[in-house]
Length: 209
Image (tube, rainbow, N blue to C red):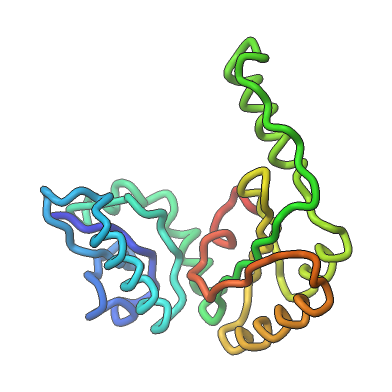
Protein backbone atom coordinates (compact mmCIF):
# COMPACT_ATOMS: atom_id res chain seq x y z
CA UNK A 1 0.00 0.00 0.00
CA UNK A 2 1.18 3.53 -0.78
CA UNK A 3 -0.24 7.03 -0.55
CA UNK A 4 -0.55 9.69 -3.22
CA UNK A 5 0.57 12.90 -1.54
CA UNK A 6 -1.96 15.74 -1.77
CA UNK A 7 -0.31 18.53 0.19
CA UNK A 8 1.81 19.81 3.06
CA UNK A 9 0.09 20.92 6.28
CA UNK A 10 0.95 22.50 9.61
CA UNK A 11 -1.26 20.30 11.76
CA UNK A 12 -2.48 16.71 11.80
CA UNK A 13 -6.00 17.83 12.67
CA UNK A 14 -6.15 19.80 9.41
CA UNK A 15 -5.95 16.46 7.57
CA UNK A 16 -7.74 13.74 9.49
CA UNK A 17 -10.21 12.17 8.87
CA UNK A 18 -10.40 13.48 5.29
CA UNK A 19 -7.04 11.96 4.34
CA UNK A 20 -4.14 10.01 5.79
CA UNK A 21 -1.73 12.17 7.84
CA UNK A 22 1.92 11.33 7.16
CA UNK A 23 4.39 12.87 9.68
CA UNK A 24 7.12 15.00 8.10
CA UNK A 25 9.23 16.49 10.88
CA UNK A 26 7.16 19.32 12.38
CA UNK A 27 4.77 19.15 9.42
CA UNK A 28 2.40 16.59 7.93
CA UNK A 29 1.65 15.38 4.43
CA UNK A 30 -1.90 14.54 3.44
CA UNK A 31 -2.21 11.36 1.43
CA UNK A 32 -4.78 9.22 -0.35
CA UNK A 33 -4.27 5.49 0.14
CA UNK A 34 -3.67 3.60 -3.10
CA UNK A 35 -3.30 -0.13 -3.69
CA UNK A 36 0.01 -1.17 -5.21
CA UNK A 37 -1.70 -2.48 -8.34
CA UNK A 38 -3.80 0.66 -8.95
CA UNK A 39 -2.25 2.99 -11.57
CA UNK A 40 -1.81 6.58 -10.42
CA UNK A 41 -3.48 7.67 -13.66
CA UNK A 42 -6.69 5.81 -12.84
CA UNK A 43 -9.59 8.20 -13.44
CA UNK A 44 -11.49 7.27 -10.29
CA UNK A 45 -8.36 7.84 -8.21
CA UNK A 46 -7.69 11.22 -9.80
CA UNK A 47 -11.27 12.32 -9.08
CA UNK A 48 -11.09 11.03 -5.50
CA UNK A 49 -7.88 12.96 -4.85
CA UNK A 50 -9.42 16.13 -6.35
CA UNK A 51 -12.40 15.82 -4.01
CA UNK A 52 -10.14 15.25 -1.01
CA UNK A 53 -8.03 18.25 -1.98
CA UNK A 54 -11.12 20.49 -2.04
CA UNK A 55 -12.29 19.18 1.34
CA UNK A 56 -8.85 19.73 2.86
CA UNK A 57 -8.76 23.34 1.66
CA UNK A 58 -12.09 24.00 3.36
CA UNK A 59 -10.44 23.02 6.65
CA UNK A 60 -7.14 24.92 6.37
CA UNK A 61 -4.63 26.33 3.91
CA UNK A 62 -1.95 23.93 2.70
CA UNK A 63 0.78 23.71 0.06
CA UNK A 64 -0.30 21.66 -2.94
CA UNK A 65 1.98 18.87 -4.17
CA UNK A 66 1.90 18.13 -7.88
CA UNK A 67 -0.12 15.00 -8.57
CA UNK A 68 1.85 11.78 -8.98
CA UNK A 69 4.17 11.93 -5.94
CA UNK A 70 3.61 8.81 -3.83
CA UNK A 71 5.28 7.45 -0.69
CA UNK A 72 5.01 4.27 1.36
CA UNK A 73 6.12 5.61 4.74
CA UNK A 74 6.97 8.67 6.78
CA UNK A 75 10.63 7.71 6.44
CA UNK A 76 10.43 7.73 2.65
CA UNK A 77 8.64 11.07 2.74
CA UNK A 78 11.36 12.54 4.96
CA UNK A 79 14.12 11.24 2.71
CA UNK A 80 12.51 12.85 -0.34
CA UNK A 81 11.27 16.11 1.21
CA UNK A 82 13.80 17.00 3.92
CA UNK A 83 15.44 19.92 2.03
CA UNK A 84 12.04 21.66 1.69
CA UNK A 85 10.63 21.23 5.19
CA UNK A 86 11.86 24.45 6.78
CA UNK A 87 10.84 26.55 3.77
CA UNK A 88 7.42 24.92 3.74
CA UNK A 89 7.01 25.53 7.47
CA UNK A 90 7.76 29.25 7.07
CA UNK A 91 5.36 29.59 4.13
CA UNK A 92 2.53 27.83 5.95
CA UNK A 93 3.00 29.98 9.03
CA UNK A 94 3.11 33.15 6.92
CA UNK A 95 0.12 32.30 4.71
CA UNK A 96 -2.04 30.41 7.18
CA UNK A 97 -5.04 32.61 6.37
CA UNK A 98 -4.42 32.94 2.62
CA UNK A 99 -5.40 31.01 -0.50
CA UNK A 100 -4.66 31.40 -4.19
CA UNK A 101 -7.08 32.42 -6.93
CA UNK A 102 -6.31 32.25 -10.65
CA UNK A 103 -7.34 34.59 -13.44
CA UNK A 104 -6.59 32.91 -16.78
CA UNK A 105 -6.73 35.18 -19.82
CA UNK A 106 -6.20 34.59 -23.54
CA UNK A 107 -3.18 36.46 -24.89
CA UNK A 108 -3.56 39.41 -27.24
CA UNK A 109 -0.73 38.27 -29.51
CA UNK A 110 1.47 35.22 -29.85
CA UNK A 111 4.84 34.44 -31.36
CA UNK A 112 4.90 31.42 -33.73
CA UNK A 113 6.08 28.22 -32.07
CA UNK A 114 9.64 27.44 -33.24
CA UNK A 115 10.26 24.42 -35.48
CA UNK A 116 12.52 21.81 -33.89
CA UNK A 117 14.35 21.05 -37.14
CA UNK A 118 15.47 24.68 -37.42
CA UNK A 119 17.83 24.31 -34.45
CA UNK A 120 21.13 22.48 -34.23
CA UNK A 121 20.69 21.48 -30.60
CA UNK A 122 17.89 20.65 -28.23
CA UNK A 123 19.11 23.36 -25.86
CA UNK A 124 18.77 26.04 -28.55
CA UNK A 125 15.28 24.82 -29.40
CA UNK A 126 14.15 24.83 -25.77
CA UNK A 127 15.55 28.34 -25.34
CA UNK A 128 13.61 29.57 -28.39
CA UNK A 129 10.46 27.80 -27.19
CA UNK A 130 10.78 29.45 -23.79
CA UNK A 131 11.26 32.87 -25.39
CA UNK A 132 8.20 32.37 -27.60
CA UNK A 133 6.12 31.43 -24.57
CA UNK A 134 7.37 34.39 -22.55
CA UNK A 135 6.59 36.75 -25.44
CA UNK A 136 2.86 36.13 -25.03
CA UNK A 137 1.11 39.07 -23.40
CA UNK A 138 -2.28 40.63 -22.80
CA UNK A 139 -3.71 44.11 -23.22
CA UNK A 140 -1.61 46.33 -20.90
CA UNK A 141 -4.72 48.05 -19.53
CA UNK A 142 -6.27 44.71 -18.59
CA UNK A 143 -3.00 43.48 -17.09
CA UNK A 144 -2.77 46.58 -14.92
CA UNK A 145 -6.39 46.30 -13.79
CA UNK A 146 -6.04 42.58 -12.99
CA UNK A 147 -2.85 43.19 -11.05
CA UNK A 148 -4.72 45.62 -8.80
CA UNK A 149 -6.94 42.79 -7.54
CA UNK A 150 -4.25 41.87 -5.04
CA UNK A 151 -0.81 40.36 -4.60
CA UNK A 152 -0.37 38.95 -8.10
CA UNK A 153 2.19 36.84 -9.95
CA UNK A 154 1.85 36.52 -13.72
CA UNK A 155 2.63 33.03 -14.99
CA UNK A 156 3.22 31.97 -18.61
CA UNK A 157 1.66 28.52 -18.83
CA UNK A 158 1.79 28.29 -22.62
CA UNK A 159 1.89 30.55 -25.66
CA UNK A 160 -1.89 31.06 -25.76
CA UNK A 161 -2.75 32.22 -22.26
CA UNK A 162 -1.43 33.93 -19.17
CA UNK A 163 -2.42 33.42 -15.56
CA UNK A 164 -2.60 36.11 -12.91
CA UNK A 165 -2.24 34.10 -9.70
CA UNK A 166 -3.53 36.06 -6.72
CA UNK A 167 -2.69 35.56 -3.06
CA UNK A 168 -5.98 36.29 -1.29
CA UNK A 169 -7.06 36.32 2.33
CA UNK A 170 -9.67 33.67 2.98
CA UNK A 171 -12.18 36.34 3.95
CA UNK A 172 -11.38 38.26 0.76
CA UNK A 173 -12.41 35.59 -1.76
CA UNK A 174 -15.87 37.05 -2.38
CA UNK A 175 -14.38 40.53 -2.81
CA UNK A 176 -12.07 39.21 -5.55
CA UNK A 177 -14.97 37.42 -7.24
CA UNK A 178 -16.94 40.66 -7.27
CA UNK A 179 -13.92 42.48 -8.67
CA UNK A 180 -13.69 39.82 -11.38
CA UNK A 181 -17.28 40.53 -12.40
CA UNK A 182 -16.41 44.21 -12.63
CA UNK A 183 -13.43 43.34 -14.86
CA UNK A 184 -15.82 41.54 -17.23
CA UNK A 185 -17.90 44.69 -17.48
CA UNK A 186 -14.86 46.92 -17.95
CA UNK A 187 -13.21 44.66 -20.55
CA UNK A 188 -16.02 42.78 -22.34
CA UNK A 189 -13.76 42.11 -25.32
CA UNK A 190 -11.19 40.15 -23.27
CA UNK A 191 -12.16 36.57 -22.36
CA UNK A 192 -10.86 35.31 -19.02
CA UNK A 193 -11.74 32.82 -16.31
CA UNK A 194 -11.43 33.54 -12.58
CA UNK A 195 -11.25 30.39 -10.47
CA UNK A 196 -10.45 29.31 -6.93
CA UNK A 197 -9.82 29.34 -4.10
CA UNK A 198 -6.90 26.96 -4.43
CA UNK A 199 -4.18 25.77 -2.07
CA UNK A 200 -0.77 27.44 -2.18
CA UNK A 201 1.19 26.50 -5.28
CA UNK A 202 2.62 29.43 -7.23
CA UNK A 203 3.28 31.39 -4.02
CA UNK A 204 5.06 28.34 -2.60
CA UNK A 205 7.28 27.91 -5.66
CA UNK A 206 10.69 29.58 -5.73
CA UNK A 207 10.66 29.46 -9.56
CA UNK A 208 7.79 31.97 -9.67
CA UNK A 209 9.25 34.64 -7.41
